[in-house]
Length: 83
Image (cartoon, rainbow, N blue to C red; front, side, top):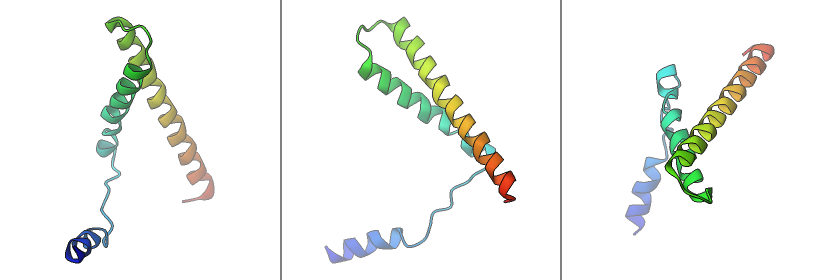
């Protein structure tokens, strides 16, 4: 048991390289779509496919829009600070 714990701890000893280029940021799109789909599938009261698609699309655009606003705000703060 102790050996398994030590192997697991070794996996977390070095930080994982997370790419931050534009292409890797596109992975946010399927994640946001799946979050919107699962959330609306749980919360919708009267299920019709057209209503589900409309609600998921609206929530997806809202999440992406909010992420863009936050990214622009953080970029403005970074430019202001001089990073």
